[in-house]
Length: 127
Image 1: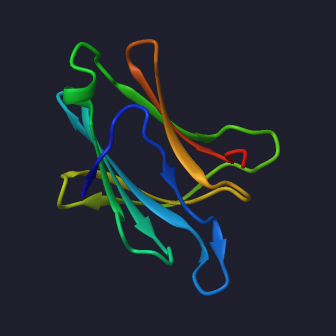
Image 2: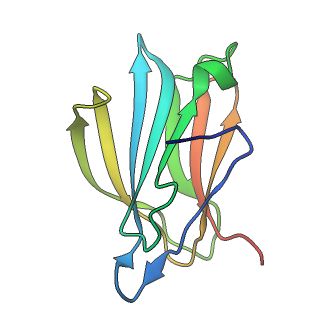
């Protein structure tokens, strides 16, 4: 599992002929109302290296109290990410989300603001 820092981004292919649309599983873990970890897993991707990611919020932002999160796309040119399944993740003991990525995006980035909010954003990086 790859440990992420605040500036890290996750690159992916949004669509392939063989696998179709890319998908991610996101497990935000809360302890006493405070988000402590985010686990992200690749799904339907052709390359399997570094397919698991971990964002340790207690280590990266020790003075922050992340209580909210949102998943969105940062562009007027694309649609929103589609959460197609919510389910209980037994491994992390939290609600997990299976998400289809928006059209023509290739990167996941993280944005922290107002001291209590985490945004997981799907974007198209300029080449």
